[in-house]
Length: 217
Ligand SMILES: C[S@@+](CC[C@H](N)C(=O)[O-])C[C@H]1O[C@@H](n2cnc3c(N)ncnc32)[C@H](O)[C@@H]1O
Image (cartoon, rainbow, N blue to C red; front, side):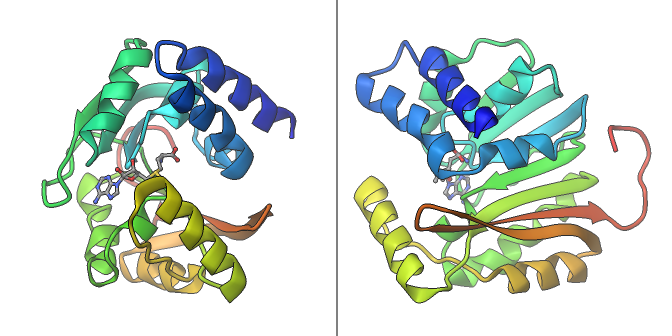
C-alpha cells in the first residue's frame, strides 16, 4: 500500500493546474487501479507507448522514478490529452490524440502498456486491437484490465464506468487474452488476478518470443 499512497500523493501534486474534480479523480485512481504493479513491470530505461493513457499518470510516475527512457501516451480523448499536456511538462514525455481507427505510432518502443483500455473497445474489435501491439515491434506488453467474472463484480465495474463515461464496457476474460498473446507470438510471463475493493483486475505481462535488437529488456 506504500507505493499506492505515494502515487496518490504524486497525482495530487501533478494535477494541481486542473479542477478539483480532476485532481481528486487522479488522486483516487491508484487506490482503485494497481498502477504500482504495472509500473514495477516496466524495465529501467524503457521507451514506453502507453495506449489509452488518459491524463498520463502512469508515464509521469515512471518518469519521476527515473525508470522511463521516453514515454509517449496516446488516447482517443482530446480532453484527456489536454490534461496530460497541461500538467506534465517533463521533456521525456509526449502525448498525442489518436482516433480509434488511426495507426499506432511506430516508435521504436520497448514496452506497450494498456491500462483499462481494452474494456472500452467494442467486443468485435478487441482481437484486432490486441494484434496492433505486434505492429509496434515492442518486446514487452503490460496489460491491465478487468475480468467479467464473477458476475456481481462485473456489474459493479460496469456501473462505475457508466457513471464515469456514460458508456457500456466490454470486459474480456484473462484466459482469452493470454491465448491471443500466444497466438500473436508472445510468451506470457505473468498473468495474475489482483482483487481491490470490488474491482476484479488482472495484469498480464507478455514478452515477444524471439529477442529483437536494442532496447531495454
Ligand atoms: C479508464 S481510462 C484509463 C486511463 C489510463 N490508462 C489510466 O489507467 O489511468 C480508459 C482510457 O482509454 C481511452 N480509450 C478508449 N478507447 C481507446 C482507443 N481505441 N484508443 C485509444 N484510447 C482509447 C479513453 O479515452 C480513456 O482515456
